[in-house]
Length: 176
Image (cartoon, rainbow, N blue to C red):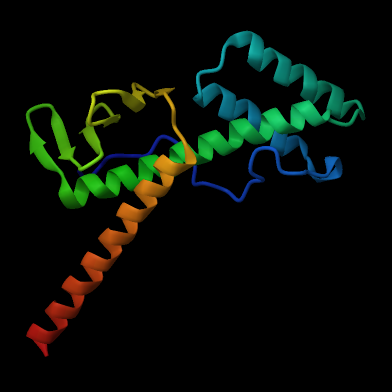
C-alpha cells in the first residue's frame, strides 16, 4: 500500500454548495482553483473555457454571478469530497486490505475497494457492483457520490482510529 499517492490536493475549507457566499470573498486564486478542479473532475473543454471567460470578466472588474459562485462551490466541494474519500479509502486499504495480483482489495459490508498502487487506480463500488468512484490514470468518474457515502467512510476512518488507539494501549501495557 505504501507509495499510493492521492492525486488531489488536501481538502480545504470551502463553502458547501448552495451556501451564501459574499462576492468580495472571491479571489483570482479561487477562480484558478475552480479551473483546476474542473480539470481534475474531467469537465469538458467548453466548461473550462467558460471558467476562463468568467475569470477574465472578474479580472476586468465584474462581479461573479450567483450562478457562477454556486457552480464554483459545487465543483470545488466535489473535488474536496473526492480527495477526502480517496484518503480514507487508502487508509482503509492499508488497515483491512488484502493484496492480490491486481493490487489490494477490501471487501466491506456495504462497499468494496480495489487499489492498484503502481497505476494509482482506485475503484469504490457498492456490493451490487455499481461503481461509486473510479480513479484511473488520473481521470475521475463519479456516480451517485453523496454526503452519506462520504459520512460512511468518515465513520470507518473513526473506527480505524479507535482500533489503532486500542492497539497502542495494549502495546504500552505489554512494554510497561
